[in-house]
Length: 445
Image 1 (tube, one colour):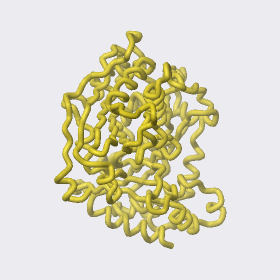
Image 2: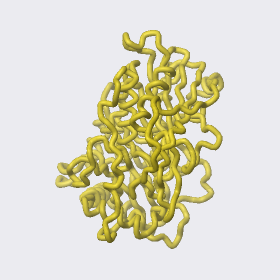
Image 3: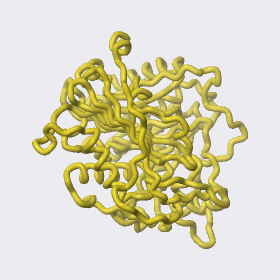
Image 4: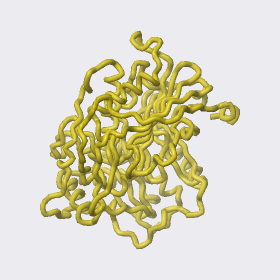
């Protein structure tokens, strides 16, 4: 966003309101799964959706704020735990009190158009005005005893609108959030119930009796030094996003030996590239161990976890590759790709069961922080398909990266029209320039 536009940009918000289920729901206490209440998931996930003024005939003349708010209330009738509040019991186990208290909703008006925001790709991460479009209601950001979902719908001067939300990660992962968003879409379009009914059944991801750790979980390696893998004086964090289209992917793939070139996925290629560039940019001590954690969706039949369609909890495994910073920096891209491929192959039913048992035995510790980087691929998620009656969003996904985590987002290049992967990155200011230099060298070959 240009400095001139930033000066003109303003948002007027109404007082936030609690939105509960449209009908009475069960008043029960539900236990979260062992994957849900990991310490590393006790934070909020923001998402943002930009929509043009392109209503369907059924939505002509209707207010998107009212339509979405009513659809949200109807969806909460089926997803009523999201209208409750979390509490912590013995051994730091999380439970949700399904009290119907509601989620927080804010109505807002902005004085600029979507076309103005599109100038310079302002509708893609990082979102420089997120705090305006997703108001942090005082006292709402806690994990316990707070609303589990915060949503703001902002009307734009052109008739378009922006939907921004913040979800307590312990309740849902990205795939589950998408399922809930699709339920809101169904209700907005007049359905009486979601096309896919929600399933709780969090007990399916409970520890074995007795629990036993049978796999190595490098994401939880003990650390004698808990300092961050970057200069603690680097308080200025720079946010940028990088686009990888067919041209960039081909340039990276051509650097691999033939056996990796033919058998390497785009995810593995991108993860290896970004992990390597990031490690070099942070100038990490060559002898220090660095890690990359791949978030793996365990739904479906591949991992034999027997999660039914409609399951909307956290269903993510976290296999982690390790290397010394020196080896990762000096060896070719193929070295990093091979590490990522091998660690992804370790994800199995036994690995997931071992991870769940690890949480039970170890008491849900914090994962390794020093030298760690986490990637989550949501390119197949479908957020870009969510249509409340005003067409598909111009952009849908995370508004930015977080310090140790990036997302892979399906994105259409507005100049070429081609689809590729958008990756938001955040690094200390001193490291971002070096990261860009390294990435440029690798993608221009």
